[in-house]
Amino acid sequence: MCGIVGYIGTQQAAPLLLEGLTRLEHRGYDSAGVAVVGGTGLRVAKKAGRVRDLGESLPKRFAGKAGIGHTRWATHGPANDVNAHPHTDTDGRVAVVHNGIIDNAAALRAELVDGGIELTSDTDTEVLAHLVAASTAETLEEKVAEALGRVEGTYGVAFVHADFPDRMVVARNGSPLIIGVGEKEMHVASDLAALVRYTTTVAHLDDGEMATVTAAGFTTYRLSPNGPAAVDRRAAAVDIDPSDYDTGDTTSFMHKEMREQPAVAERVLRGRLDERFGTSHLGGLELDARELRAIRRIKILGCGSAYYVGQMGAALVEELARIPAEAEAASEFRYRNPIIEPDTLYVAVSQSGETIDTLLAIQEIKRKGGRVIGVVNVVGSAIAREVDGGIYLHAGPEVAVASTKALTNMFLAFALLALQLGRVRDLSLAEGKQLIAALSELPDQIQQIVEREDELAPIAERLAEAASLFFIGRVRGYPVAREGAQKFKEISYRHAEAYQTSELKHGPLALISTEVPTVAIVPDDELVERNVAALHEIAARGGPLVVVTHEGVDLGGVAKGDCFRIDVPRSVRVLDPILLTVPLQVLAYRAALHLGLDIDKPRNLAKSVTVE
Image (cartoon, rainbow, N blue to C red; front, side):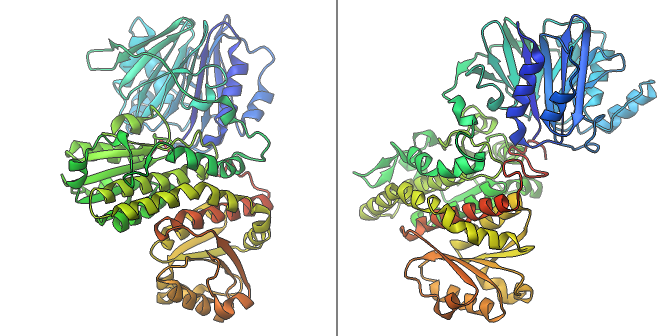
């Protein structure tokens, strides 16, 4: 969740580190710091608050051509100047920045205290600096390897040492770390966003790997009980546009990414629709027709919005392919000792490809002999490298914490998967062609919705004034309601709860009042009459309503009361959920804008959750 940057080369490091940290602000953080190595040794500056606060507090002479920086999201100890990274040893010779959690930190801290070391912070990270400083090994690589050999847990780490000013040493175990190759300079980061302004030639470290980084290049090692062993790790160019990390003419990344949805939806479909045979082409699955037919169950794993879109995907698979499918929170999966079935296809969903809960679930599946594919947005990410095959989302970098364009492309990826599975089973050619035609229309239909932002703004502002909201839907509409509630919670800080419409009268109806609006998902499907009946129950109790529906749906007398209506374009029923979801994104965005909140950096949250 935190951010790491590093630089070594011919330029002064501090300005580059600060710029890199600014580009990682979307990951979520509460303090920031930098350390540089120069002619006067090691110097450290850190501060609770924003990166700009750190920049304003830096000493005028903060020179050094090698350095590391960090944005911290508090886990061990509160957000303050002392707990901010980098952390140093007692003599101020070693500095370290760290993403992840050291599980045996308490035991290591006790050992250091018993040895006469005075610890100054509450963090787990500080022990790393002291362990490296205490090592009697001759090289920095050996010192770091020895220290990491005593650590249990997850980490992405970068070290600098006053006695080795020509290098930094970095390592990874469960938390992403990327090396960027420049001209007589090298960069390190936990996210491509911090690198793309300087280089698009990068190398991703794998778990259990360490690297020495100098201005001339890098050398990679595999950590082992016998010490670091050299491995061949090469840098490669990534296809990425640095402008993707700028807001352009929009007010925020979320706003920009909502507006990009029609284009990225078209991109994920491009080249994957086969109109002749009414199917889809997903070569990344590495499954032929015989293997696809052998699948008897689909299990989808994700966290947050990825989990909710996984529920939408499970419904798509069941309806189109008639295969039992379900979605489950990846964060809970491995802790219940799951039964891994040989004829089940497991699908891991993650925008970043680094979500630790999902990655650990994948490893549990593979440990037990299961087959798992990924639905991810980041090429070269940990999940993309771990799975047996997958579907890339091609949504481009998504910076805002609240997912919009990646979620839309996740849904479309599931539609493509369900279509391919359906066509090797009982879905007819005509049905396949009908679905392809509907998929081809979706980008334009999404465009129609996002263009209505100003029209939806007054509705959003009304919802923003409520302290608590209900989101309701049935069958296909329920995961839409869950995702809508998630968006409101994430960026408007309003309590929002999602329920199946049918469950209202089994308890939650007691909370309906004039002060509690309900956002109802009412597609024009086989349940429309049931859904409208529930709206009448809410209206009869004075509950304000916002109904997301299709043109022509008769809401009866409900529409004459305290009710706003939002009509979305029609598609085939299985694709309706994504069109019903887009206006909820707009409502959440405009509600947060009305409240004057920092939309891209919601409190307590991060874009990529890399700690359990």
